Image (cartoon, one colour):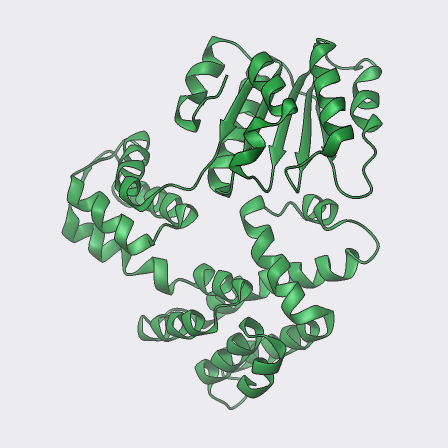
Length: 340
């Protein structure tokens, strides 16, 4: 069956299907739906997980081989197959269909990092819909975002008028991850209460535009203008300089690690090893393509100088130097040489 994400918990409560496909461009929805499947499996004592990534070095017989040998710990296992391209090809599609037709005791969870609507018509997807559940994870349209936020608020034990949801939708500009984080923060600030617009305005404090994590994301995505506006907002709100550096430094160190290791192993395997959430992977990959290992190494060295500036141990203009660094990293190499 084809099932929209909000109805997945109800389906899982009735029983676990043999196969799940979660695919779409909205990474938050994809990962949260996958977490729902994992949680339901654990509740049914399906604790063992087998994780596979169908990258360029993947051999499709690995899927069958992974379940041929019985488990030492449990009668059923959760087999997670991640498809970075969302397209298994003729061989992969056939293997998936065969796996379904063989009626395994294990549960197969397929997660697609890229997805197109036309792929719903493929034979392997149709086979999954017939035997299990396909959950599309499309981006929430702007007109529906206030309702999505309202549902999220309700799930956290809060209540809010329409104007609060409209305000959050406008401020968060369609960024579901930022919206989810903001609702979580409001739940901590105002537990089990009715949210008032004025207090929400004060609490949000333009966080979608000006928080440190947002700055790191903008740099990774290659948006120099937005990154500079974000830095000025951080400066005007007296954000702690070390916290700003920590968020940016974390992403740059991961990017450098991925850039180095992906020369000898797949990026997906590196991300999995580093436990980097799917929604963070495309911006990091974009930063790597734009900068390469050498520029990333130089940027991390400049962060060390910024750290000394933030502690007052050397002389210089912290925010000005941060602007130059972020503009350079977010720009294409030719433009970056001028920004630096």
